[in-house]
Image (cartoon, rainbow, N blue to C red; front, side):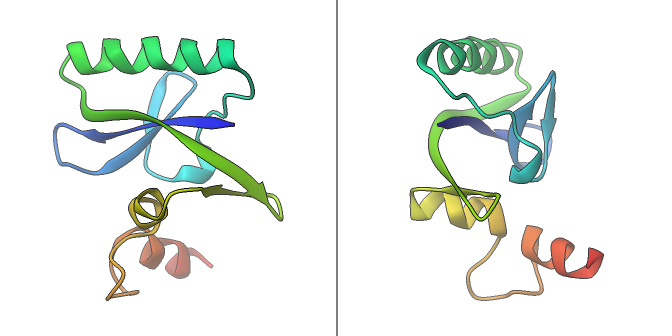
Length: 99
């Protein structure tokens, strides 16, 4: 399984693609379950890059653990959560405040 991720050009925020939008939380991302849907995401990412909407466009590997999306690479887990030295900053802080 894969997701399409990038950084939004306007502010550098890590974002994921979901049904026509670039969302700020990995939980909202559109999951590619097969090669064809991953290729379709890659086309979308290349167009968004060409349109100067995002940079650092990548398809990333994920797994579903207990119903939640977990990137397989540490880099992507950090991008999804936020800084590793301050739990009160980044996406992880937003999730804690909402709970």
